[in-house]
Length: 317
Image 1: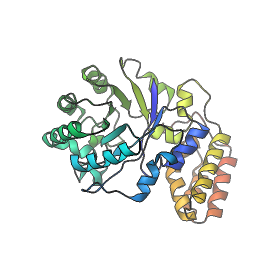
Image 2: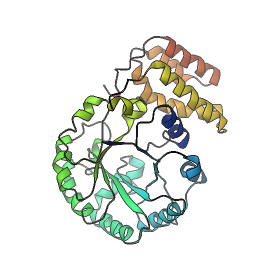
Image 3: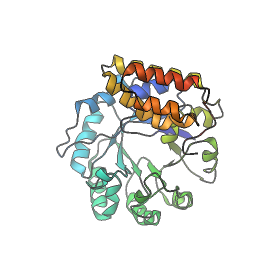
Image 4: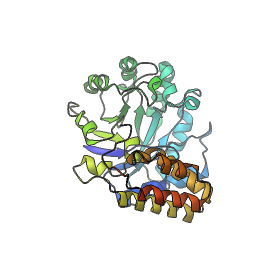
């Protein structure tokens, strides 16, 4: 079973990917956080730096686009082809309110005629293979039957299905029965995504005959050793997590990020990683409230020195 690392905006940047691959690995590929071009296909220089092949040496990286029209998708896909990429992922899954309000991400599922028209133009002209990451509906996963009729019309390289409707955001339970029912009806390779936080969660997919792979997201951010654990290896140690954190901080600062920006990025990670420190509310509060790098570093040291790290504590447990 192939494993991939999901794109998470503000978290899985090239520096994070490099550090994770060096210290943990275990995934076949990383998906870059989405590129959101304007109507003419232009996007931020910082986004380009994140996906440049020379900044992702040794990694298999799949760029992702967040658009609701074919033209900007095709223009950026052409640029990505020139950089050597052979696959581009279309985001039809982001449930964020600001994204959906622009009829992008999961918002594209609200107008299936427009979705069909967009995909028809993309697949008739795109110079590289196109994969799709999708939710199973807007309000209910039962909507996926009609959505799949559209997807099945096109030569999608792979369909990565997050087993929730948009309305569930990340709080409702994944609808595994709906996913399993849809799997044999898909005409392209299918990858599963949604609430894989432990090896036991992977075991629930044993009934998914023909599944090509699994995309790990929040679970792998909370526990960077999760891919190794899923494959039967050792669980995360406190020393590994501390070294990973310190290496990230060093890289952020060396990249030219200011102390405040570096701490902000790491605090986003701690939202997930703090699940490995149950009963550490005092230490966690000090870490998240720190405004100066010295205070932040002292709080991190106190957290690890507290002896409350628990490798068996899984995200969202």
